[in-house]
Length: 479
Ligand code: LFR
Image (cartoon, rainbow, N blue to C red; front, side, top):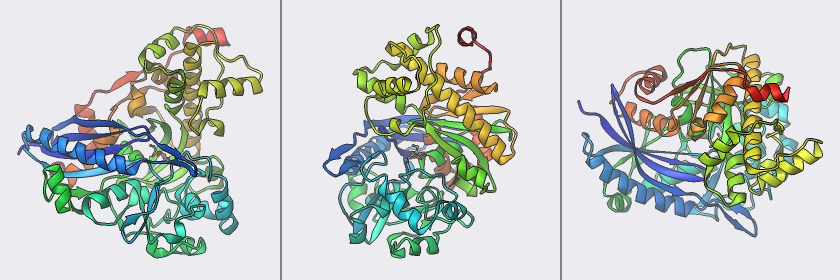
């Protein structure tokens, strides 16, 4: 039986890609069909996503994927699955999008929403019901402050919106729906009471679907544009982090992960929630995972600090900067990467300098020093979050998996190993796309089994790199 070919649309906060995955019992290969930028738009009312451009790029990417698939043993695509960042949504009325969806890094509305929601549902009660860490941009907070809310008859999260534009079917994929704050953490169904108390019309929310379900098939005009009439759209872990965690090749149960992209999502896969007051105060979330798992994690700063610094410097040579950062011998300050000042887009080197000045530590004087400071600060934050996760969930951690684009950052992976005192297994780089294609391939019958089987296939086929913890000379200098 030849491997099946499926297309994964993976939309990230700074770029998107369409990949073709070839999957069989002993085959797992990815081919890049298209990569494109995702540039937010700032207008007078705030920061927005250009979802129409993302749709256009998705269509072009799918056409390229269809051509690529023609050259594989499968000869054609069996399905397409879409994932993206979480929480952000489009509001529709009679099937038409109202305005441009807001970007979760929009500063304008971020204070008002939480105030409005917490007035009705205090943080403790909310956590007991939805299990989510407090992020000011969780969908329910955004919605409370959204001027278009009252005009809408449907809310679709970004991947669901893209799937709707492909198929005409409105559905709410469950892993991503868990990031709205409107899902019951225990039943993983819409929480009608929370929804009613917040004055949200129940009909705004679409029916939930699980990863692996066929949502619909391409609309005739879409199928024609892409060259794949009738292609099924299959729900995957449409929250990119849910797909990334499917892509973690856990080598044993005593393992934690850092899904390292724009954010560093640090935590554990669990089967039961840990809804304690300690977990709430530590801001640990319970996002819905594929196959009913729980992603017990916290959002830490990720490569955003690096990419925004590069943008501020007008540079695009991260590898060269990391090499220079690796050669820095003197001590560098460890800054608090969780400081809210680092969330909105902007001049991060200046913000780091300001943080250092406020905390009476010497700021690094050049780009290499700043990059080294960012790397060490990120690693310190991950080490702390991992210790906290292990303590809260009462779970031993003996190895840390680092997946996603950031797993290519050797300096950072080594710093995480050193900071935690644990071995780091880095890779796969494309964990999210792999998680996306594997869930589709399983739905198509090309692979069988649970997450353990899918992960074993990743471990057998993908390039992974191991880092052992060791103390480095510069650490002694710092001490
Ligand atoms: C990562 C991610 C995180 C989510 C953040 C905002 O890409 O999806 O999991 O908290 O973006 O949506």
